[in-house]
Image (cartoon, rainbow, N blue to C red):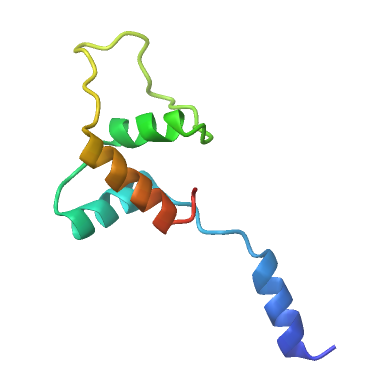
Length: 87
C-alpha cells in the first residue's frame, strides 16, 4: 500500500480540533460585528441537545437573573456551530 494512501486514511481518523467558546465568540464578532456571552452559547447548545461539559466553577444560585439571547444572537451562534461542524 503506497504511503500516500496510508496518510490519507490516517487523516480521516484524526480527531477533530476541539471547538472552544473563545473560537465561537471570535467567529461571531468577526462575521457579525457583535459579541456574545458564553452563557448564551451554552444556552443555545443546551437547547440543541449538544453535550455540555461540567463547569467546575458553576454556582447553584445566580446573583442576578439570567438574560436570554436575542433571536439574532441565537442565529449567529447556530451559524458558528455549523461553521465549526458542531451541528
